[in-house]
Image (cartoon, rainbow over all chains, first blue to last red; front, side, top):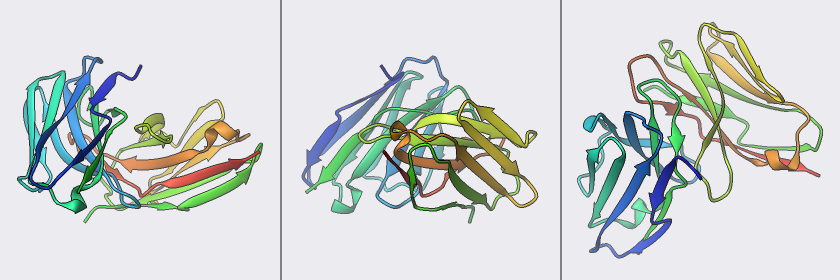
Length: 112
Length: 112
């Protein structure tokens, strides 16, 4: 079992829907991340939280809204998405800055 | 802006042969270089990493080399096996930051 669990694995949503992605880490790490993975593009960092405080917001559109209630849980709230937002969304955790990332298996999001 | 170039984008080798993937980074302050393996339907998994105070690191059939002067680092896989088939990503990070710059990935196919 991976130390980082993401749900759901797959999600199809219309452009007017509201949905949330969930991530939980069981590694005792201090930092949690959201990445977007699109075909033939580098992994794109979206948000970073360290000890529940947001430390990075990589110019992400406001239709993506993160929430980190504690250092083990991370959510990504989705609202009024566009078809180009279809991608694999990966959650990761790390002990601290500049240390190895541990990824979940991702949520495959399709926006119709 | 900062970037990491990764080559080749695809690589096919015969089982038992060696595979080499190369990355070049632009940020001279980068001092941490992890490599990730991503299998189909899974998130990236760390396979080896190196910090800038070391020129080479080896773990069984996998090795990474770093040339700080040229800002190059490479992944070497010897005695390749079919289970090595996956997408491999390099990344560069630096002290005090949570942001890693990823390469665009190399799809490795090991032919039996």
